[in-house]
Length: 347
Ligand code: UDP
Image 1 (tube, rainbow, N blue to C red):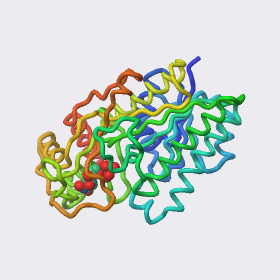
Image 2: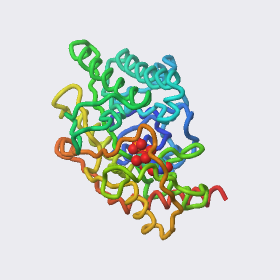
Image 3: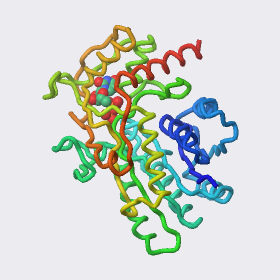
Image 4: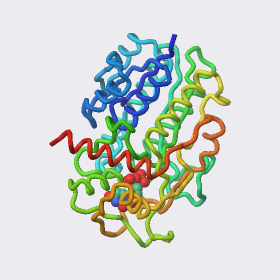
């Protein structure tokens, strides 16, 4: 029988892409989402891409213990991939209680319920934000974490530690929890079908949705935050990873858990390309790929931004047998196709 994977936050940007790849790999998937930061179109897109109308969907808030408990009673869950979290860095600074409450309580509930139902594998969606402004680049999983720049970042660090401690404690108990944290770099792009992609509410905080919305005419002008960094072109350097490549890393991590291949009860993997690209470079690549001349201007640095961050993905490449495959150009083309699809849909 196929293993069953719960994807919490499965209707969101990354969760929807992961759901598609899990189904393609033959897993049974249950999706839970409280729809606080997405609409049902993401899940509808997943159903269209996979041709599966029967994916169980729970509109629940993981902060509600009873709802999570009911889901685990109705399904024998073999692994959880936990995405359900707030993710707006700026908002987390002004609303820290909301962020700490939501991101910690939802994860604690997942862990407690998993334990109550006999234990399972837990994959936590972490972030390269835990590295802060690293002195050493590229960063490996051994690179020390730095104090987070925001409550959002803090919740990622804290949830990693919670998972590590729960794995340690349960290793000698009846209900064992094994854990993997995947540290994402900068996920961008959309599914090649253009049926699912990033759907930011209001003004986008992230670079690529801002670029595509400017190109389509939804935004007047892209602000490039800082061109006076000590980098080649003065703009920040990031490791932009295609969302489908990222999704496939989850499938590889789940397979590692189910295959008994983990070397420790709790493991961490960087999920990046290993290739630094500057913000300005990304803008020019987008112009080339789309054929659109982008309206942009340089403005002062954004508070809280690190100058440069990219991954050493060797550990994931070797241990997960996974590697980012798409070029930045292919990924930008997918983001542009998605923006055009949205414009057509909303006509
Ligand atoms: N950025 C920018 N203009 C924008 C949004 C982002 O210049 O409208 C820059 C930002 O300063 C950073 C990079 O793009 O250097 C990536 O930012 P994003 O918010 O997408 O991800 P982060 O790396 O902050 O997680």
